[in-house]
Length: 232
Image 1 (cartoon, rainbow, N blue to C red):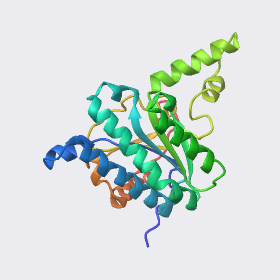
Image 2 (cartoon, helix red, strand yellow; image 1 turned 180 degrees about the vertical axis):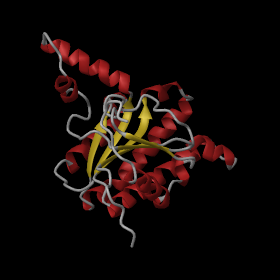
Image 3 (tube, rainbow, N blue to C red; image 1 turned 120 degrees about the vertical axis):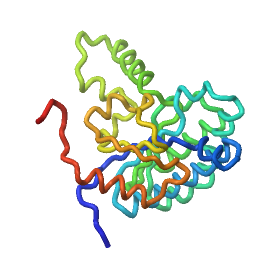
Image 4 (cartoon, rainbow, N blue to C red; image 1 turned 90 degrees about the vertical axis):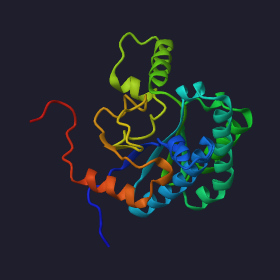
């Protein structure tokens, strides 16, 4: 069995292409989001098998509120059903759930379910499943600066910003994967990915499999990491 060397510890995934996947098959957009939820389960299993320690999924952005109301609340239904159906599985697989973003702005029952699962899995020591939900990097930085302003610090350093980010308990991502062929970051973890490697896949998220993940990891393993600066 081929072993991938130099695996990233933390992989962030911008799950793009659900709607286009559905439209291409003459299905409603929500069908794409439903299949996208299945892809999340598939990639979590693959990451466990391959030895990835942390997975961050960009599940719902602050910009997504601008979408059609029926689609937005349909997405919430999918997240709600995913958490309900996966609760015991996450716990039995020793997976720890973390969340980035102000999830308290979600429907009350969904926010309560997230809080319940955060508490239930907080002591798990396996794969960390980090969901970015109602998340935007600019909002995250504004929140961090406001928290620091309340502290009355005369001077703010990088360590101050980092401890007030949603991801303060996690190492920065090593690799960011975006699906669907789009090549932009869409306000995702802009501070944390300063030195991350970027990988763009043309595959729509609902069709993304372990094979595609392995391809991204193999590509990453061949790169020479450069942590800032203009190295030649």
